[in-house]
Length: 377
Image 1 (cartoon, rainbow, N blue to C red):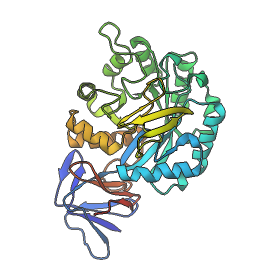
Image 2: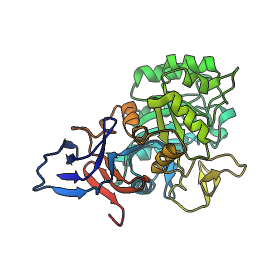
Image 3: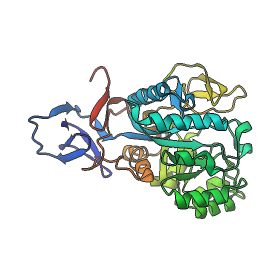
Image 4: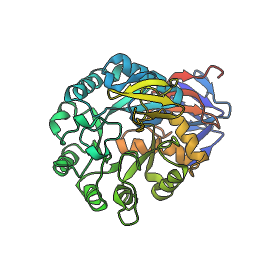
């Protein structure tokens, strides 16, 4: 067993000092009188300790991509993410050929449990059931009508699907999936749905919105569209807080409106945690300079955002408190996925991260095993 001492524990919306946390694969005890004999001690040295971060939307990192469809790529992504405090994630696919998507899903089904870094919780299928007019960096050549045949062999692995509810066949697909497979989060994204259609889709089974503001119609005071529908409902949504995809004003606005229905994601591609240069996303060339990743025509192509950086952005130029930001990458996504992660509670998985005032990651613990620590800790 391991015991973390001298920590600022983020628990139940509070920062608690003077208590220790004892765990093996799960959290065993949180108190001020834990016996330190016969346990390994980790001294947090006054730093913050929270549940591990969960990324619902990430394509790749460290030079690897989910669509590479190899164990090696999954292992690379999984290992690199430890330095960002990410303890688990949804491996996110792209709109590519049926064969390419199938290979990626087969690979995750076969190899997800073998990675030694951040845990792979399942698949986020981003496309191919999207609107060609809002394809963004997705290759519109491979867009198709919603079809259960694409996913039925991987129904246990698929945890989230981003789709456009206005396209032909979407209504029946959404209603069927939400009824038969309630573990799958259905999310509106890469869509040009009007306000009324989007609101209707929430009745069909849509419960979330993917990277709000991006790859969807703009908010207009006479045509509020998807953003207006999300603002007028209790569905959750996520946002890319990299200060490239969204202006600080938009970050503050969505937080003020959605509050505890807001999740932070990275939407990172293979250039995440890498140097600037030329990469690819979904078979298309991507050029990375600074914090910006773009296609040859200048279209934003995923991001190079790190999840701990998203927290920093939302607490500096955004309007989130530290606790709100942490909840947006722990408690809220865990509740969406119905998993016993995302909170420091007895009986929950011991996925834990230690970080400093600047959100630099000091140590990352998964299932009670310390899998990352910075060199000077």
